Structures are given as structure tokens and as C-alpha cells.
Image 1 (cartoon, rainbow over the protein chains, first blue to last red):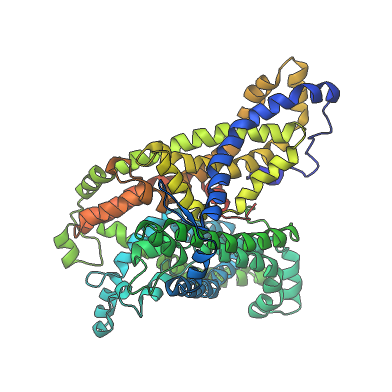
Image 2: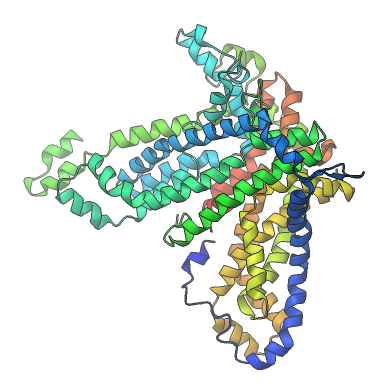
Length: 319
Length: 289
């Protein structure tokens, strides 16, 4: 991916410099299709087939291995009345909104970072700030669930140490705090794509712009509002849609830290779907939920593609 | 520092004024953010070398003697999970690179009827999140009687990885100058030889990127191995840690040692291949290409 950015757009000599075009066209195709065959088989079998079978089965009372009955839209109407399912979307909306608001911190960190004059210091701080990205997600979830541990957890120990012992809670186990506990995992939320995108965008703003602004007596805060933020609008828009899609797939943190509980307070669609399938053994209904999730994601992904197309300058990889 | 400022002649006053301003406040703010970000992991590191008594008496600070044997204890328990993850990652990488290198080469260098159609069919899979095909894929694997095998772990990684793999390889190979291929052809190389001796060696950087994306994916994949594997020796690290967590119970030292050991491969890749690693992290997101 790194090298791809170097490739000039002109260097795509696909059809052009094929000197023996006539002979080749007769000779090559079968070999070409043969070469593509393994990939096509793998994708058809393990990507296209499951996706379509999921959509197909959402109209069935699906009993894998046994007889399945076509029940039309029954699963979908059942979904409309499924309170846990919609509750899980409410939680998801909350997770999303919080996540977007929390971009303030990575944005602030990126602003601080570009303020540093020393390139070396910038590199060191940037690297240290994104180290948490290198930890597997499960490890982050487990370490944080220890932070919330009711007896030995870091948060309760801090509260006790500063004399606020009465505030100590069973953070992940209390319905009124569980969702907040999930949201604060990874605080201060810097290690992630938003930070990388903010930082690379700020870095790519021409220095002349800042110098001109400085000559005009624009201070740092004013510069942020009048220069940095407008120039980042596109990236923020892209990031926004990416975050929607990313959030729709949110699940394993909730599974590890709270298991969707207590009392469905942290239920999310992915967990609901898995519970319906594996605990309820209700495969047809699970397929319905999964199809719905799939449709949501498809619609939003399509939007992302169009946002991206209108904006070829978006390049998070140019780090 | 104040001495230096005093001795500076007035002509270089602007420089002198800038020099003491080493941006301490910015650096202090950034340091606080770094500390808060890393604190949970630093705490894990400190606790991983304590026994339970030291943990109870000195909660916050690391204390001597360090109990490095915690790492040995943890390693014994998570070793099978690490091996399973390495096996899954290795075979997935081989599968992905083999399939997508050939496909990328074909898409980048040959024109044939249906070329665009096939590429769009492949690239559009970028938008399909794999969590949504989890249920049908699971049923399919169960029908194939593949649950509790390495195949069930490897196949989805290959099927997902080839999508981004093919896109990356195609873009990369398009960037290789045509003259190289022409020269080799003039020297009498056929398509197979071109692929083997010209293209594959040149593609090593992008193969590395694909490998990192895959390793990152294997180490972070959670629900699929959780649902398809019930035999302990086939569990990958992400799921294995959860069971390890249940076993180590209140032995906090070995528990954190296990977490850190499980993170070590990704941390090493991050340290030494930071650029590719970040490409890999971002490659995991739909629409980031």
C-alpha cells in the first residue's frame, strides 16, 4: 500500500503497451480465466454464497439439517416487535454519538503534535500515542475489565485512595454504569484511525498558510477555527461514515466486558444476533437480524464510496 | 539556560528568544496524554512481575523481587493458543498471497473480456462486513463437518484476505514499469517465468503488507473462533485468553503476564514494521482504499 501511493496514475499500461495484442487476445484468455479460477471459486463459495444464503434463509424458519419452512416476512415482523433488538440499536446509537464526541481528544492531541517544531519529538510522541493500537483488542478489553473490577480494579482503588471510597462501584456490573464503562474503554481514545487521519491532514496543510496567518496576527485558537477545521471537513465527513459502519459491527468488547448485560443494558445488535442463533438456536430469525444488519451496512458503505469518490485527496495512508 | 540567554549578542535576539521556548507546555500536555493512554498497559506490565502478596501490599508500584516465573507459568498455559494462531496466520498468508498475487498480476497486466466485471465483483466485497455472514457461514461449515478443525479457522481469513490482497497487488503491479516486463519478454520469458522471476520478487513489500493485515486480523478475530472451536488446542489467542483468564482466576501476576505475552507478536511487528503495521490497521476498514 505504501508503494501504491508512489505510482503515478499514468502508469497503468494495461491495454496500451501490449505489443502482440492480436496474438495474445486469441491465446491468453483461457489461461487468464484458469489463473483466476481458484480465487473466483473461493469467493463464490465463502463470500457470495453465505451472503445470499443468509438473505434467502431470513424468510424461513430455518432448521439446518432438517426441514425448513418458508414463512415469508414473519421473521421481519417479529423483528419489528423485538424490544431487545431495538434497545440494542439505541445502545449502538449512544456508542456512536459518544465515539464521535470523543474525537475531540484525538483532535486536540493532533493539534498539539503539529505544534511541536521538532520533527523528532513529533515522531516520538506520535509513536507513543498510537502504541495501544498494537495491542490485540481482546487484551485491551481484558485489561480494561480489570480496571473496572469491583474489588481490585484500578478505578475503585483510585477512588478509595483519594478518600472517595463511597463512590466505588461495580462499574461493569451495574445497569446504570455498564454502558458508560464500555464507552470509556481505551480512554483517552487517541490510538486509532481518527487521530491518524487528523494528524496526517494537519501535517499536509501547507506551511505557507500558517506563516501567512501568523503574519496577519492570527493566534493558535483562531487558526484552529478558521484554517485547520475547515480544511479537515472532508476527512471528518469520511471518518463519520466509517465510524457508522465500524460501530454497526461493535460487539466483542461488550461480549468480553459485560456480555451484553446486566439486564441488556449493553446489548448490541451483533451480540443479539449471536445470542438468537447460538443460545436460542433460532437460525432463521438470526439470519433475519444478520440480513438487516447487512442492509444497513451496505447502504452506509455505498454512501462512503460516493463520499470517497468525490474526494481523491483523502489519504490516510500517507503517514 | 538563563546564562545562555544573557550572553547572546543583541543581533541574534530572535533566535535567542525562540531557543528557550522549547514548547515545554505542549510537551507536558502530550506526555500526560501518553501516560494516560499507556497507563492500563503499564499497570499490567508492573503487576505481571508480582506475586499475589506483593500485589496486595504494593498495588501501584513495581516491587522487588521481580517474579519473572509468572511469565513461564503464563507461557505454559497460552502456548497452545499462540501456536494455533501462528499456524492459522501462516496458512492464511500463504493462501491469500498465492491467490491474490496471481489475480493481481492477471488484472494488472492482461486485458480480457470480463476483466472489469470480475474486478468489480471482487472489490465490492470490501464493503461487506464479515460479521454479517457469520451465521450462514457457520451453518455452512457445520454442514461441511468442519467445526473444530484448522480449516474452519483458515478458510474465512483467506476468503476475506484475498479481497484486499487482490486490490493491493493489482495497484502495486500496475506501478511496476512495463519496460521490465518487456525486457524479460524479449529475453524469452513466458508468462509463468515473468510471474515467478520478475513480479514476485518486486512485490515483496506489498506481500509484507498483506501478511501484516492477515496477522493483525488473526490476532483480533474473536467471534468466529469462539463459535467454531470447542477443542482447547485449536483455540486461537484471542479466544484462548478468555479461557486463560477464567483459569488464572485471582493469580494476577501470571494473568497479566499472559496478556502481555499474547500481545508480544503484534507489539514486535509494530515496533519494527510500524509503517506496514499502520497500513494493515487501516486496511481493515471498509472504504479506506
